[in-house]
Every structure is written in structure tokens, then in C-alpha cells.
Length: 239
Ligand SMILES: [Zn+2]
Image (tube, rainbow, N blue to C red):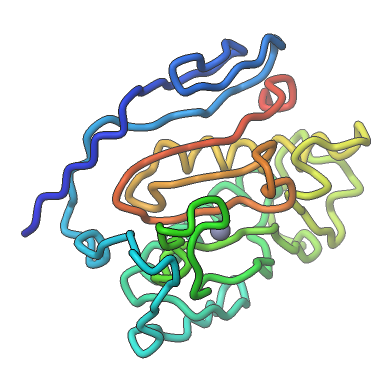
């Protein structure tokens, strides 16, 4: 088994409104939960895509489209083209979503909204490094659609009445919601992201709001290094 060690320098795990100076971030505002973490030293657990080089001298991604498979989720009714190794990660993600959604909304969602997995490209900011999407190794998660609360389901005691019907949860509108009534959705999305940040067996890299170009989705990948770059209001996480 190849052992891959990537030293990325400073590590910081922050929660509770302190700015992650070590990771080059800064924010003086209190009451926010920060995730700006780079984990020093990464030891591969044998994941199939770990040994593949992420660097391209030409600046142009070359992709093995033939290695991809179609993943059709029966539970969350979405279809993506992905590497088979990443499909296993997606299935773990689907189980986590169902678990947290039942806790939070009394039922699992019916559909997952996304902007795809496989996309043959380099990073927008660094053209000599391929995107994890080029390996079929990253999902851009936009949100979830819920059906009505089933008659026999046990609703959590704090579930607002208007969430017994169908609704959608979206990163773009609910991560930092403008309306107070959307706080329940914000709390769910934040809990999901926080939980993912502690579960490298599902995803290793997470980028979300308020990072540039990530206001409307969470980028979730299984790159051979770990990072979590997002933050959210701490108030709505308590429930
Ligand atoms: Zn992405």
C-alpha cells in the first residue's frame, strides 16, 4: 500500500469566533464557527485515487473518462458520473444525510440537488493542478428536497408546523438566511457540514460559504489531503 504524506504546514481547528491566523484567515467578528483547517501530514488509507498525481505540466487536464461509472441513488434520486471509489463515499454521505435529517426534520429527504461530480478541468486558480472533479472525486452539493412528514413519523418537538409539508433546503438561500423562519434550515446545513468536517471517512476536503465561488454549494472531495474551509453563524447551530 503506498504511503502518501503531504505536508501542508499550519494546522488549526477553530470553533467559537476566533480567527484562524495560522491558516491565513482573519475575521474579528465573534459568534461564528470557523473551519479553516489544513491537516499536517496525510497518511493514505489505501484509497484508490490517492497515488494519482494532481499536477499537470501542460496546464491542461487529461481525464480517464472510461474509469467513471454512473451512480444512481435510489434513496436521494440523483445521478452523477463518478469514480467507483468515490461512489462509496457518496453512499456514506447519503446515510449521514438521512440520519441527520430524521433527527432534524423527522424524515429523510427525497432528492439531492447538486452541480455534478466528474468535470475534466484544472483548478480555476492554479492551472497546473487538476481539480478533484477531473478524477470524479468531488461533489458540488447544493441542497436537499423534502417531501411531507409521513403520517407515522415522529416529528422532533421543535419542528415548526410549516416544515411538516414539502420544502427545499439550499446552501444558496439557507446557509446565511435572510429570514428568521429559515433558521431551522441553516442549523441543519451547519450541522451537516460540521459533522462532515469530523468524518474523513466520508470526505476529506470541504469548501463552502463564504469562500469565493462557494456561496451556493459545498464542494466535497476525497483529495489526498484534508481541509475544511467554511464558516457559519454560531447562533443558529444550537438546537
Ligand atoms: Zn467542486
